Image (cartoon, helix red, strand yellow):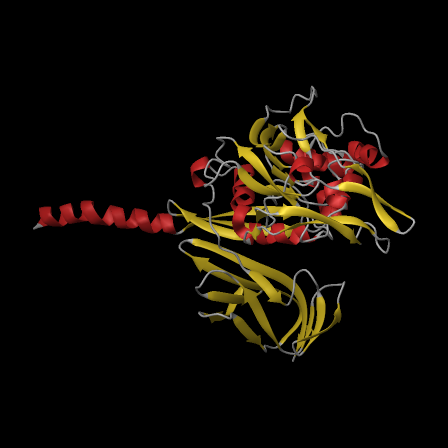
Length: 443
């Protein structure tokens, strides 16, 4: 009887304890995102607000917007390897100017060289490069003055060529679906298709530079542009003559065959760069059209702009796995534990992240540039493609759950002051969350 008991203990108890201890292990990765007025930054944050289970470990990205002062090493939670694992810069131009400041630049470099990760997309890729090899405009010179130089690459991003696909974009319908040939690197080798279509909107082609900085590591390609934007989507410079629009000349790009994405090291840190936008929706099929209109770059002046039409628009998560795996890799997570391809996502519809408003009893009264402000009660509403349970939290405490769409929490709790609202959806070991800070006044 004693022998039988020992055998049962050996066969079953160790296995049970091992499984239990594995499922209890949680690994948090702190992700600092540099904010911008560009909407793609909020999309990128949604893409990275993610959790996943693998081999009994639960990984979670804690995503935080970080201020200029904090990037410089000051403030409440400065950019250090003690506070953050990865620094992310997406589609933005503010870093070009901030990077001119020695304190800003030096602290970011020290963070990465000391073991922190860096992920740059579009403007964030330019920022990490050695700059423009042959600057020909004021913008080029500003970029060159502010670059970090943490990747041994030049950025091919000419104002009269590649940038025109940003300047002339009609907005959400702009951008060009460009095929990119993927490598066998762990970040991208799980792709269900190769080449992979990624949205392009004026980002750089990247090519090898000649810096002798000893902290620079070798460049590993992740993706190469397999198409030329100006051939895939021909657009033009136009001018108005006697009231009629006329073509002056075509926009010509020259990034085909150059790197669309790379991975490398800088000191003890890992760096991943994307010229195109894996965080954005793209289109399968379709074609470009041009028409007179206005953009945020032309303000009240009419110019010829472009849209991509008649294709099948992908869902938001089509390439989110690239961004998620890039951040996980930059954070030092093992290749075999990088996030899976998953279409899980959740968006806060009300209150709205993109358009902060003043709400009174659930009704949006006016824009609130100072941040979302809620007076009285209101329905918190989310959008998700996953049919499961959505949980709502205030300041990390679960307050409500909903198991069927539409997922709505009719909020009416006594809160006064600044609070963090979070909604989370989970499915098969993966979870996505949406969060927003709001000033709440509800008695």
